[in-house]
Picture 1: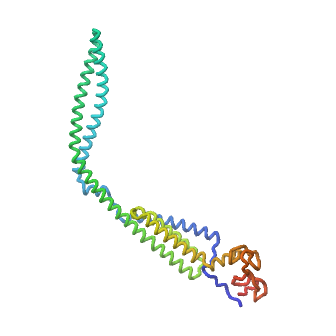
Picture 2: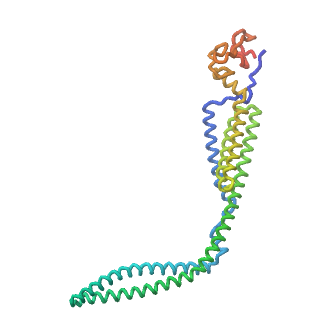
Picture 3: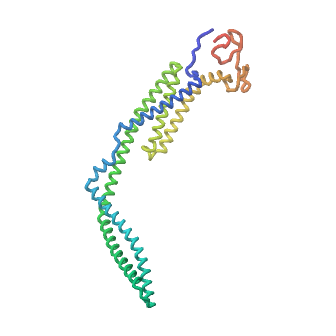
Length: 317
């Protein structure tokens, strides 16, 4: 009895070139998906920190705060500069005073050194007075700034909290928009894959590449948002989702890639024992497991593979 070759879809074979091109499709589809993801960011409104700040902090208060802050900064700068000058003047004054004392003890009269001592004393006294004024100005500026700084800190905390909530809302909206794109693409890819598989189409590899790209998009979304949006439960969420994806992958591989019909077809095509996978080498029985590999064809009487759908000599089924 003879019949046409009715190849099961699970036994559809793809060449190495087709697999490489399919992998290229996955890469290019992923690039296109990344472009879509980037443009989806334009859909939700990104929170504007400056606009939120303007709603809570008036321009007059900002001007007053920064003016007081700049006054304190200027006073601190002036105090620091005077402190350095006073330190140098104090050192000079101590030296000239000791020099003048020694001269008086020895009865030496030197108008030049005496004048230097008087100048050093005058400069030291002047700088000490300036330092007192600078410290008073700095303290006044600090006193003026303290209540403004306290209010500024409170308002900034309010602005920061509102911006944080708005940013979180934006991230959720962006996540939902991206999921509204990624999930239907994955569902469409799965639908096309199932449809082509039922039809035993030789173009099933296109749907396989599409599923690969769609899966990469979903994995990217999960990895990107699992930490930003699920900070408190990130680890358990990753564990659950990762376990579910791995289990799904194993089931899909077992169901579509390692099903018995496909394994049988692959082993026969490779010249292996259909039972254990050892090299068959045209043996009647497998040298590894003893399984019968060939039997006499009822059509022509020649030996034919046991699990072959047709006799390779006469096409008898």
